[in-house]
Length: 184
Image (tube, rainbow, N blue to C red; front, top):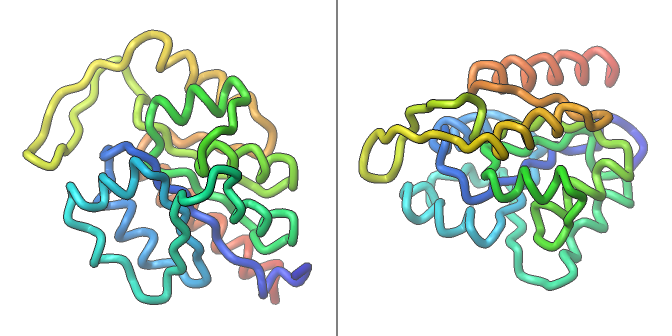
């Protein structure tokens, strides 16, 4: 699958609820998308009552094997872009330190090894945040280590770290325009 027209979006959901509903809407707006759902994200889909809200054109891959068999799709050149959004502090920390022991972290590692562009939206982007939980808005205060991990993530090659949902939408839109330009 070397032709850009035949490649797909890869999107990873983790256990973060930060802008979760908005991310589902953005996922549903994209064509040719494979969604990778971690075990924690599967729980979040239920908590936010979004399990049935995913478009039927989205292919879903769940974290169901110890070796994350589905990452082999990156070796076969199936994807033009990986989106990690929203991403929990746990996933960010593991990605920064090169730990790839879950579907989400393994996909990030393999996408980097396969030179797939990544747009990454971590949940901990400021010292104080307001986020929607299943029971309403709550204030959260990311720790210094969480904020430092986000800074370290910005150093990864082929990884664009966005600090807000609006930035995520802009980067996805920018990538769509680039894809249209180079797939014509």
